[in-house]
Image (tube, rainbow, N blue to C red; front, side, top):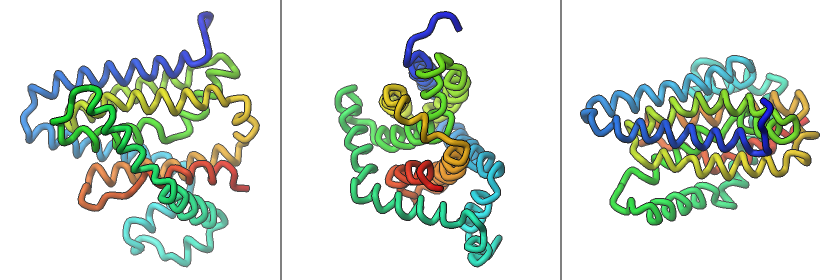
Length: 253
């Protein structure tokens, strides 16, 4: 791509989310409650599939998810015998502890409340959940991290452009079923990927093949958790508080 500036990929990603969200918002007005509920279930399954698909590329992540599904598919002792079991234990438990102390989920919610108030959507009861769920869905994953680094250091926004296409479709469906709060996930993407773009020079040396594999594996588990929250909202997993697990995963050796 001849025309390029640092952050171009993120701007395209933000624009794609806004476009997808607006199409879903106006299209969703013509959908019945039953159709919206079905779309929400479909969206949950898509997000779960994305997490499972990433996990399938990493046998350790797949074993961990299988254990999360009830412990009947695979024994805990088999998980612990796996060479990378400690990666998931340290990342998710350690990351969750850090996230809970920092209260990342609370900060996400406060940002969502601020956006809801500033955008004149005080009466939208679903705004907050829609914003947090959509933000986690489009921010978690190796594509966001590597895409932002490549955008800055290699002047190549290709990964983020591909991610933008995926996010457009996901946010379209989410907005149609969850509401306009999903559109504002563009703010989260802009902040998250923008920060990585700015810090790319410092982050890039840490992104070894092992770090990328760990990031993908742990990220897949978190994305799976987002899908479970969509499908079973009464059993909500605090995925936002688990985000530091991604940092621990990248540093794990």
